[in-house]
Length: 393
Image 1 (tube, rainbow, N blue to C red):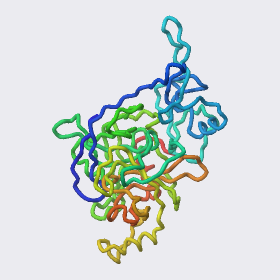
Image 2: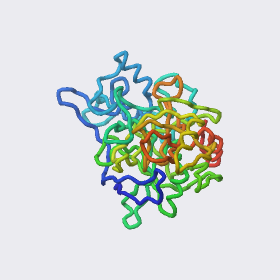
Image 3: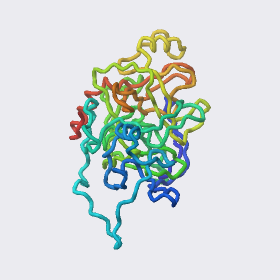
Image 4: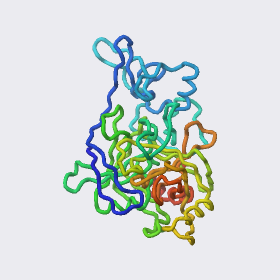
């Protein structure tokens, strides 16, 4: 697709980023000819053999265990690809027939964080698994701290088609994939769509270059905004965007787990990623990330009351949760609608969405930012999904 900058209509964290034109497509990079194997996505390397139909048969957790026991082949230079043997190819060029399990039926999608698969060949798509290497640093503002490809496979771009050239997409804000056809975002972001055609772009990382795994685009056919959303106060700032067709799950495209309604999360190592602007006002063309602690409600309210623009009588609405308060580590303009994620206790590299970027005062100046409290809206989300005949657990 072609991505260009758009126009902002307010200052609440939703100024679009500026990105260059790009066209992405999948390619399998060969390693030196002296090694008789190909660098392929890890999920296609089953028992050391390239299995193009083995999607989602291996999880990040099982891969970590196999790496430790030296059961998997050596990684390639690209992030999370393996040097994998090609299957036997007869002299006449025929390949073995596809397995009977290679069905076009969309996989069952589970948000149940307590169900662990019994083995690595499960057929369900599990939410919230983050893929990353072991060494990284965080900060969404500044010039560095870029996310790795496939690290946040649920983070999507919400774009609109250009009014003059429909082939151009204008970045609006962020969102999260919670179902193969549903994106969770802020209502103030959804309101910006208006009468324009919205397109969700999933699997994106660097808008400037051709990447190994292709991004995917799906037009939005339905916008569901919370009935109690207040565009003046941003109370209940939550919306669902429904696409015309499902996304195809891949290493760079997956769904995010949702918290239970009764969950109260006070983690210090939560994460947010986005394409918004930094403190200097520079747009991000590569997805960036930062770690942020959850800030208790009473502490957040006191901190915000100290700000002249907010006032001493400010009361933090129950639909909000706060995070941040660390100097030079913050969400900034353009990050609106993006997910705030926190680790699921007892799960390795598995995350749930605790918040949605809503609003903040200034940027990167040790003030907590305000996010939509996703747990509070779990019943509403499940109810709307049920109306659509979509399954959540």
